[in-house]
Length: 214
Image 1 (cartoon, one colour):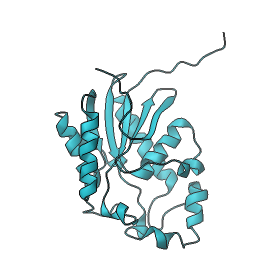
Image 2 (cartoon, rainbow, N blue to C red; image 1 turned 180 degrees about the horizontal axis):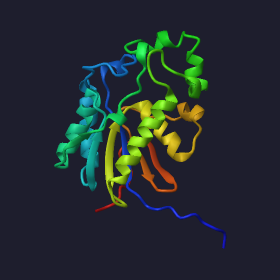
Image 3 (tube, rainbow, N blue to C red; image 1 turned 30 degrees about the horizontal axis):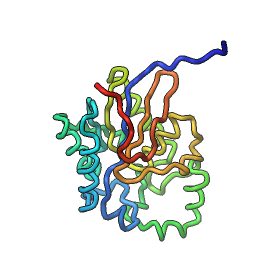
């Protein structure tokens, strides 16, 4: 029989992008700006998210420290009688001088081609690089996974690019290809993290994934 590598079964990690806010709605880059809150549609998205996850055996809820992530995580945690644990490593990319700027204006910059085609070579002016952000968020997710037993289900509320960067790392997708992934507001992406390999179970999913039963 051909050799089949063993996957040491580890927790199921729900990577949830925060719900909609006016920066998302108006196509502006919020970055790490303070006081960016969910809008009315975003609050409805969170309500639906909580309803659809009712009955799942959720053991913990972790979140980026930014308001839009916490406003997504807190109703979910409350529904399961849990407390949100803030994890700084789940925070949005530090986009430096690009914070608050419109996508339309940024797309006119020559460096935009680097962001889309070769992000491994990109550092945001006054901020961090994509490679630094990927290392940070993946290290955080690894640490979270190590705290939980096999088959446990936990949620990590984060941001679009950190989630895409994490997925790329854990499935072996080159950093320069991570922009091909799509992660919408309030979507669920599910990974099962193993000690030697990992599996992508859903990407940008909308609530119909069959989670493990407790």
